[in-house]
Length: 352
Image (cartoon, rainbow, N blue to C red; front, side, top):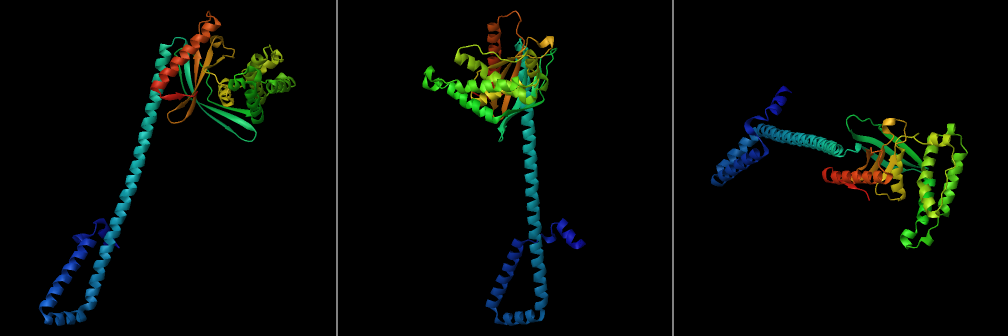
């Protein structure tokens, strides 16, 4: 056994391999053939010699044959081992490349956010959320995961690390159908074709549901219902050309507003899902902090070069002495500037 191991370790002594073995056999046969041709006595001598020593030659031949095939097997093992090593090193190389590429992508993102914040005096922070939207038989689910944030030094910010938002899929489908009928003039170019009846029925149904629940008994599902009401309310007022009050008490409104962190971002994504297009979505701060009460947030839905879906949320702090229109214009300007910078440096594609 030790002798066999030494052969494997030394890669077989004497340089025996299949090619050398065949060459030697061919040379021997050639010499014998020439000898047989020259002398007939040689044939007889060789025949007698083979008869007397045939067994020894056969054993020697088999030993050489075993060594040759064993060496071939070792070479195959070496080749297989080298291939595996090469595959492993290649995988490790790609892994390192992927990690390095991800590092530079994150560094580019951080540098871009920092430069944008430092050059935009009325923008406090930029937050990035990765999101998924999927549905089952009963719910439409929106999942947000906080991915990266840059905040101006000296300012504080409440972050949504992760958020789950479940909307009644049947009600969403009803709103999609009703909204399409209410805005059909976008296709026909005839406003008389717009029909708000179904949208009005949905609004009344949702309002009745919330009015029949005490404020202290509200759950997250009721918050989602309230967000659907706020979603269709302005389009219903505009279409019917009338003011439609939200018939909820102050205590009910307080219980519903601000209960679910990140809901405004989820609603921005839901509007896109329903196909209610907005170029720049804005919402106000709803908390109780005095330092944040003038803040306004804008959302940008994007897809990067890898096909990943993100929402960027910009926190703005406009001058409180500005008119409402000036605040809106400044927020739109700053948001558009961020889109332009990010498209160039982060290489994302804004969803239209």
